[in-house]
Length: 369
Ligand SMILES: Cc1ncc(COP(=O)(O)O)c(C=O)c1O
Image 1 (cartoon, helix red, strand yellow):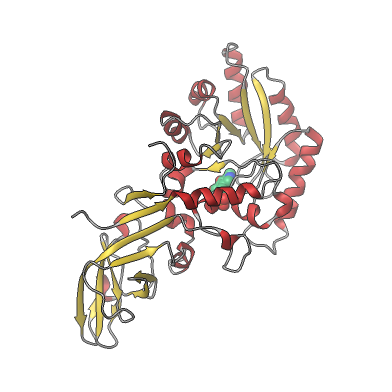
Image 2 (tube, protein in one colour):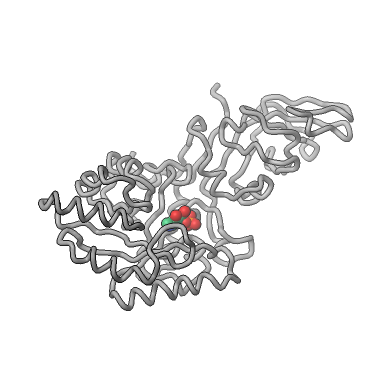
């Protein structure tokens, strides 16, 4: 039998979540963000599963876009960091990728490239990033109209979408989101062009921002950006369930250490279960004692440091657990958000850090393969 650790990925839930995003779009337009291997879920499978629903996809690099194209994806693909070097421009033009332009050096390189390649297809759609307050990428609102005009004047440029990214949309009390939105929509009125700003928290929680092309990422994968109790966040369905099995069970008397560094010491006679899953799979080593996992559906607690290939659970809540019993590390009935909260991190990192050696097992597959 193979190592029992698998990430079961429910593709029907993925489609449900995408449709929830789409239902929030005033213009029925939502790019599916599938960068970082679709947040660990497998970019090709995710894109194929959404291919009949999503008008476009967004990734972080040409390599990620090429992977989709090679697999037969024909939708437009936005490169969310644009190009990193002018040598990527021929591939961008050849595939009609939509690069995001966020810096003066990219404008210079693009103009230079087009001057040297006047035969370049007159069909490049690109995204122009405005720094509306996050101060990560983009031109200031004051610079944007000028850059927009320079780009629009190039014969090869077909369409320019103004875009920006929210810094605090997961905080429904923050003032920053409306300020960022106003800066972008003011520019849109001035330049009369399409826009895109809403990520998952905005799609679910900021109706005013549900304009232009939505860019949902994490919500597609079933992790709500909000605490339980949020109307739409609670409608998301779990996509990934990381599951394994107990490979050893032992009874220890009180006062015995468990695992590296003897971080956990039994306070009473305790049954300890060893699970085939560790940081070598992407399970976070910073998980503290008490981090939940489900054994036969019953919540048990991490006891001791996570090792490379294994972790140890206190089976007090599930005294009849045996070798071979199923353990859910996160997923159905144990949200990845809850696990992340014990690991000083967020769902995004748990999902994207799941390593290739964890087999992805797809269920409810509607794609052709
Ligand atoms: C530019 C951009 N747009 C959209 C997204 C999707 O964000 P989320 O996963 O919060 O929906 C990201 C994610 O990092 C991003 O960087």
